[in-house]
Image (cartoon, rainbow, N blue to C red; front, side):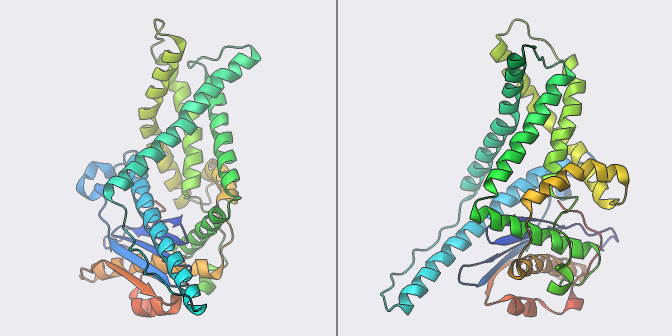
Length: 368
């Protein structure tokens, strides 16, 4: 439990050969290099909601969480990519040394700048908008043209077809990339993240033996969130667009571009509603209606999560333990310093963090 006796909220994300975990006051990134060495980076986390109180309100917090998750995710992915790349250089140097070859000093890895991270986020947003907003909208018009029946934005059928196309594109995209070896490993780390959070949900001590039996499908997963957003958009667009201006003076192409631009800010309330639904589904997992609402997302996780290895579980456990380490330190009145440390193996990393009783051993949580 947190200092105010409310459930401690934690969440995570799979990255390249690692897992990022975040608690209310901490973000930890743990990666394993090709050499087997474990790299742990942890720092104090301060949410926008701590500075702007209204962002804690229901339906506002969903948008905030989405933006923060994107920023943290890109930062964690950048760190993991640099760590893995540096590890490959070290591994190649080790192989040359073992073969008796001369090794050139490895070039120093330069971290990505905030500008580079910002541009990456902007590019990702543009790609997502093109793939999941512009393309389905245009494809829906094309479907109407193919069947000889004009579909207009003031029709429920238009948004139902649009939503189905969005889901098909999303499923096709994640299914296609799941065959890439590197992405398959990321999906395994995704499964490790979920298993670890499930164990924390149940108040278990975070050990391999306790974490391993849990399933990889989690109702509060970001995959479920995306599916719920798509389904919620069908309802909201169907209700709102019949009252939109018709723009009869505009060319049809330009008119639909305007409608696409109108859809973008409407994703903010859609994200807010979807987030609240995901929170409720996580809190009341036995409620049949809420289980039904997130069921499509759980089905989708059969693609985006894979059974992890023990080594992957170790990374997820260590990442969450480090977050809990800071939470415990803050509760005890200590201001812990940020850190970036390397360890030879999992046991060495856990031994340095402290004894099991030095951590929160579990409690209700909320994946963000």
